Length: 308
Length: 143
Ligand SMILES: [Zn+2]
Image 1 (cartoon, rainbow over the protein chains, first blue to last red):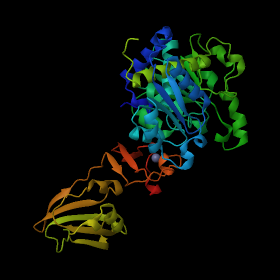
Image 2: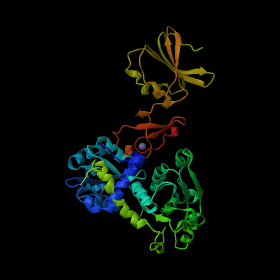
Image 3: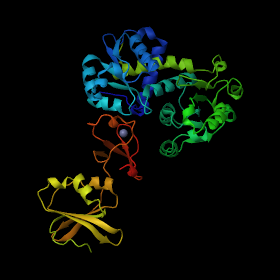
Image 4: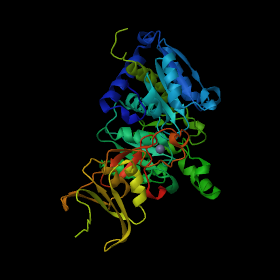
């Protein structure tokens, strides 16, 4: 029984296989339209996340499968005090695969230990969100044609942004990847990531506090939201926020073949005048997310190598 | 030379921080043993000022590696025929269950009380244990 709880549960080879399968699905979606016929995906969402849930459901429906589930803790037996372990035991009787979102870190891992079906972590608090990482990897590999030898800029809240941490952890496994970390001092990447991942592996990176000065170096610009409540005071927020907002003007220095990613939802960190720029890839990223989830579902159900 | 007075054969757990002997006694579940167990509190120590010592009689297999998680300064001597036959090197276990407790309020263990608290050794040199669920680093001060 295979589960995907952390992005690093998948080896580089497995990740590459899933990305390759996602690529094949993109080229020929009709071929896969019945691949999961008769299979059911349970979406067990202990907190609402419409975007992620719909992406999973779209993925299963595209494969010809069906979906069932719950979409908040109130609508499931957790509100009556049922443990995650008991819930997944029951869900295992109803479905063939489960995508679980939970506000508490480690809940999908608990589920995987008691489950009779593959469990996909669809986000556990601020911890892991492996299908977001797969989505990011697929987007980068499709847009740039490779995952190695890239300079990737991360901009915004690098301290609390789990998508950033996960993507860094996944990207360091490819050769020649460099990082440019653009954030206010208060929101730099956590020490453990700097020491245990970047320094430990001898990865090339730099930390800067202005987006415009590094723009020409970037192959990928990964934007994240800078939330007001992360700052100690209002003045700091107002002083700093504009440095981390992407505008059409700041893009003047960027390469023509650079792409802008964002895990969405965005608030104001990418101004709308950027949306029409050919380098804006954040809406395409959501489409790639469906393909990535389709490939993962097929793989975990053991259907990846089958002829349809 | 360590005074092993009265212990013919068994284990001496030495250099326990003064006051911690009963915690160690509980962790090792020594209360369940039928053999003779001696607890020495506040023994004088050149290195530590005061220390606790536990002496356990008889040959048996105790999972003493747990002690390395609790306190790296603890030493273990195996006694046979009134002499120290082995100074046991304690190795940090890869995984410990219900020895350390996760204090992360965002961790699933904070709301599901019946889950065992499992920690994995992620950096042996720096003695870093991380919660198997939330991966948060265990901090001594949270004990
Ligand atoms: Zn934890």
